[in-house]
Image (cartoon, rainbow, N blue to C red; front, side, top):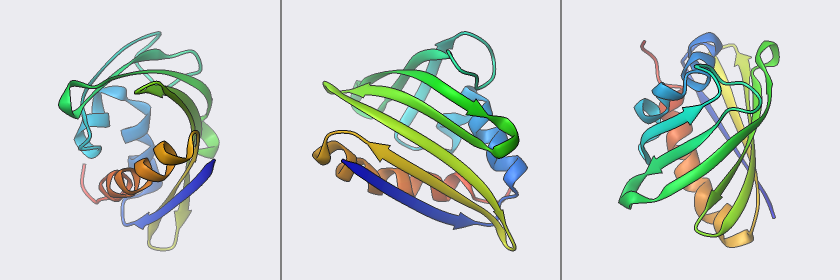
Length: 130
């Protein structure tokens, strides 16, 4: 199943991209993430692999599969509770800030269930401030 989420917010696209590009920052805007451990570089890049340590002690292995920094676009694959999700994140500059898009592909219950969590996190991603 494919599920799309879109959120608008006041953060400039460069700030939102930096929040994506540095995995150490993921837990600052995604409340479902407690911390991230990874290998393969300090910045978002194809082949970056690691584990998102989520709430309730859930460990979510991931691999970044594509990054187009100039287009503010990246994809990754995550495995959570026996399900594999493919997710594509995009950022687009708008007159009032940035639009964040997310396409989730995976089992219907997981894709539908994750959409509200993602929407909340993306609002925080696009919050103003540094």
